[in-house]
Image (cartoon, helix red, strand yellow):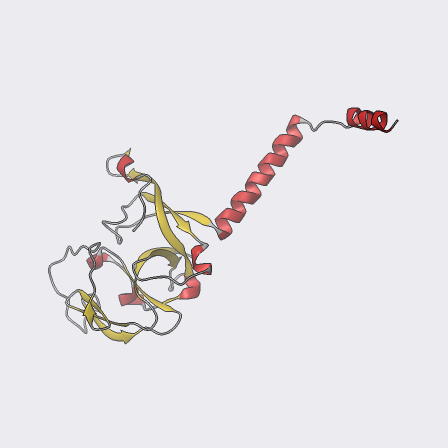
Length: 202
């Protein structure tokens, strides 16, 4: 008798319509995408050349928004953050100075704790030296970086609007760490840069 009731109940249960199944799948996908974008990974596009040659104009990158919940940024990390002078804009730069560092720049050379910093990723395209105090580009500091603050610089060192000009970055303005180029478009030649797709950001 019990088996008969179970079979009858199974037969009388109405299957979901195709429309309902598709609707539920779309809603679940949207919720997952929103959660991932908010807390885990977000995509950004590189609009300027301040991070050349590491990042090209037209690179599309993925940013890990989760990692700094468990650790602080390290020197050398490339991070996306809210621009301190206009938080509606996102900037991307490299961490050069971390809390506790003594930082100074002399004739374009960065010194951390009185030692020259090795920066194989940097390019200088302007051979001229801009003297202090007229410009902070090539001479800066010395400065002791306080807790919760970071000194950010672009790899295209002579053409980057960074901490030399707008000051230190608050840790709570950081969006995440760039880790992968998932697409790259060469706007001048109107073609993809296939060789850059899938490249890790370092």
